Image (cartoon, rainbow over all chains, first blue to last red):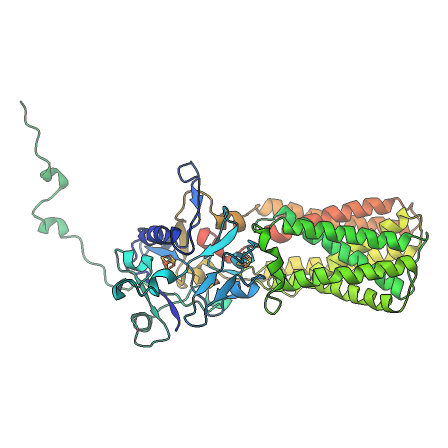
Length: 231
Length: 309
Ligand code: SF4
Ligand code: SF4
Ligand code: SF4
């Protein structure tokens, strides 16, 4: 089994709901807490397993906004695990999930240095490294109904831009999506062989908008506002 | 990369200590050590062990959970940090046996321990270099030049220390001065090659980091309003001007000035100049270590606004 995520850059709207759901689920889960630093101060900070960044691709008038959520890619060649001197970082043989055993970590940061994607963040309060667990405490939880054995970020995504599954199974949704939509890996040249795969935006002809106003029963916002009545 | 003071101190001081120990021990074991006073070799080895120990202690300061530091010896089969830790600790008993041999004049087995200590010292410094050279995420470090630099700079600084301690003991043999001069020239040449090389080589770009390789890509919003662990750890950018000024400091203070001073001493200048050479080399190589970190650009920074690494 090779579990991971597929993220559709065509439909991701960049709402950060996955990041918030991730934080909410995991802060009380097996990898929690995801410590916050001065959450109500002028410079809020803290641990996140999933961060969404926003990019502009190409130049006007061909430019497009692309939202890029990044969490652990559960790499096949996870060098973050190889460099760890304590054995706290490990990759599970049975499903490929990369985890940190907080009881063994000495907080040397070397694994974060070795991760090209910024998926690992040190918890300053506990002094140990934390990272995405692929919601291991959901996906293998037999007490949950089958449909809910999915990562929190996948369940939450309002745009249905995130998919979870087994990349070793050629018939899984993730494998099919990668095949049909030409899924891409990030920073392939570094050789980490990430499992998580990104679906590039589709090239669809733009929907013409010139006639939109004419077809509407209401021609402008002003028409909705009742005129003030003199009393 | 953020240049942490504890790591700069650790790599510079322990590198110098291992270099000093190795040079003195090899000269002793081959019978070429030019001792001016009876206790001089012991003083040299003592200074080396103090430097190494200060370095190792300061290296443990950057751990956020030192309670688990003992576990760092457990992953020798994959982790260079584990190898470094193991070699650094294994060095001590053999170094102390060699020290005891030097104090009592015993030969035989203590000589074997001396050679082993030299090997372990070299292995430790090589492992330190490999910790950095093994990281594919930092193209400025991912090169064979990194361990070569660590080894040569450790030896060069150790050689200058040896010349200084020799002068302190009242010695005036030209051998330590000539060794220091030669080691500084070789290390300086290697550093120069490294500085040229990092200008030429290319690494990952924002295009490969996002998968959009056929159009320009720009960061619009990193998704957070204040600093994060990632920007604090990797997001140090001192600016081009400062980097070039520090580079001049590295070359001038680290290599040119001490080489000139040592050459002047070989021409007959007073031995006190060796202290100036030592101070200059220490500052220059301290700056070199700062630059080694400050100039390295981690691929994570591509997701924070960098166009190429
Ligand atoms: S994304 Fe980073 S933390 Fe996750 S497995 Fe790959 S290298 Fe390790
Ligand atoms: S920070 Fe913890 S998990 Fe990461 S390399 Fe160090 S000991 Fe291992
Ligand atoms: S899989 Fe779970 S831990 Fe990983 S990013 Fe999604 S919600 Fe967070």
